[in-house]
Amino acid sequence: MISAMTRNMRTRAPASAFAVCAMMFVVMAMLPGVAASVGDRLPEFRECLEVCKAENCAPGKPATPIPLHLRLLLWDCASECDQTCQRIITGHRLAAGVNVVQFHGKWPFFRLWGIQEPASVIFSLGNLWAHVAGLRRLRRLVPPSYSLRPWYIGFGTVGMASWIFSALFHTRDFVLTERLDYFAAGASVLYGLYFTAIRVFRLDHPARASVRSVWTVICICLYAAHVGFLTLIRWDYGYNMAANVVCGIIQNGLWSWFSYREWTRTRRFWAVWPGIAVAWVMLAMSLELFDFSPIGGIFDAHSLWHLGTIGPTILWYNFLVRDALNNIQAKERLKD
Ligand SMILES: [Zn+2]
Image (cartoon, rainbow, N blue to C red; front, side, top):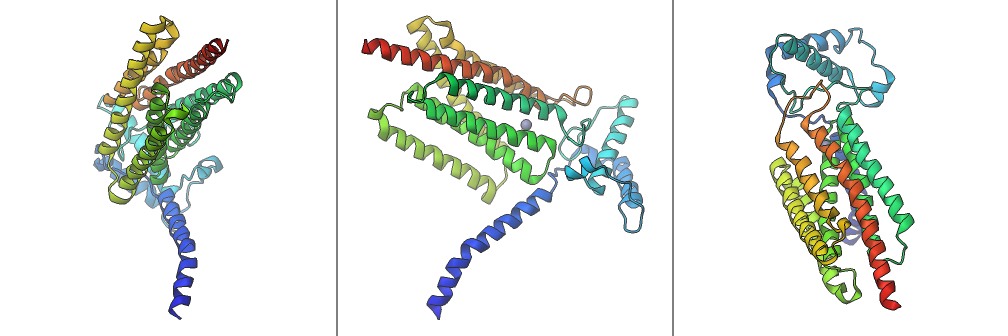
């Protein structure tokens, strides 16, 4: 009897765990990413919201129809009212020459076809394109026999995933889309550090296979701990930022040192490209320190930071291809 019960529980456990996960995802998908800001505490905003909801969303009231493209992006009566009131209050404040304020932890942006932050979405897609084009070039020019190729393809794949989730999050801000964006961005930063060590210290060599295995396990554990902490213990923006910055600084240091070493050794200009790329990324990242209201209701510091990473990504793939072809040529010269 007991063994039958435990067997039953065992077979049911994965199914129920899956059901709980699925339910959590559905709930998270529907939860708007909320954080209190000056804007949503303004009496005029609260009043606007109350009137709008009472007139449009209350049962028995004729609701203003929501166009299909907005409904597809999960805009409903309440969120439509919120968006409309944000625009009305921001319009009044601009006309009165008063500073623009944030609502629910975000600046009020001009919405385009239901997209909450159009500039950030376009620039995320720009980064996605840089990865897609770079990866295509890499696959075409670097032969499969080149030992570092799998890590370069891994870097491109994680990069593409992170920008897809970024575009999704900036299209619609829900708890789920935010989590996915942060986890994918974290994976991309950590993968950057992972493959940096593999290239800089040439851990791809068979003689260093054991060091590589240890390094791989360390990175997998770090990522699992990062996601576990944010999911199970505390969703902490400060910690998340610090973790990414630390990983970023380490890999930037490694690449700067690599560039310096290669430049002094070979005097080839392309050897300094990684150094230029990381300095460029750091410069773009400093934009995140300035949190100004969107210029023209469109371009905020965050969207410009996403714009700033497209150039270094293109440069980055150019370096990877150049470096690979150079290493292959050097190896062939040695054979001759
Ligand atoms: Zn973003």
